[in-house]
Image (cartoon, rainbow, N blue to C red; front, top):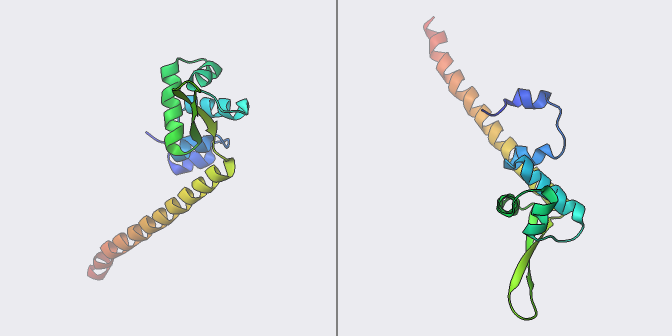
Amino acid sequence: MPDSMSEQLQRDMECEGLLECFHGLKQLDRECFRALVDAGEPLTVDEVAEAVDRERSTAYRAVQRLLQTGFIQKEQVNYDQGGYYHVYSPTDPSKIADDMQRMLNDWYAKMGQLIQEFETKYEDADAPATAES
């Protein structure tokens, strides 16, 4: 079960915890992201797998999750004699931060709406009981 908001606010959190909090990414996903950032150049899935000391298929699934969330980008590299392979690189941190800020603003607006609905619902429920007393 996820931690309550009050428990999350009391925990010490690092900025990388945002990857888990906002997108549900796992520890391995964060390790793969860090490997891509540290590399300073685009990497293949095989290179990512080697950097995080995992099987290729395991690293591939983490890379796919990072792609889906927009944390990394995929580029196709063509061989001169035909064929191609893909390399991956981190998305610009300011774009990731902007996306997370937008998501936080949307969440905040939604929570404000739900709080208002809660207040309205239970104020209405309380009003008849007070009038009957």
